[in-house]
Length: 115
Image 1: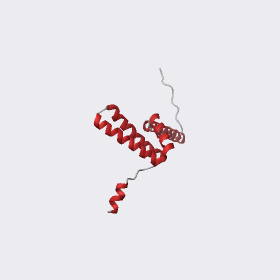
Image 2: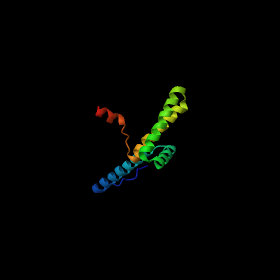
Image 3: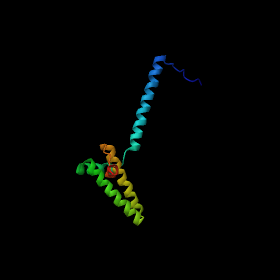
Image 4: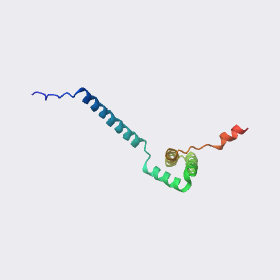
């Protein structure tokens, strides 16, 4: 049984097709990476609520306070659930930074420079 004859594309046509393949591949990679890096819906929902209630800075501070409480509770009680809650609030803080561009600048650095 003979293989069907391959039709060869003209030189310019082949370059165009290769460019299309590269563009499609780039779009697919971008979509995959955005899906992989996207936070779970519960974290995005939490971030939306906090930003709506407190604004970017207040939302970040509230998430930090909840993260600290969860971290301390996990340290004293050793609970896996509490460690998971700490990771949850840390993810909320990172998502607030990603969505709003807010970066917390602690007062410690300012106080150190004034000495």
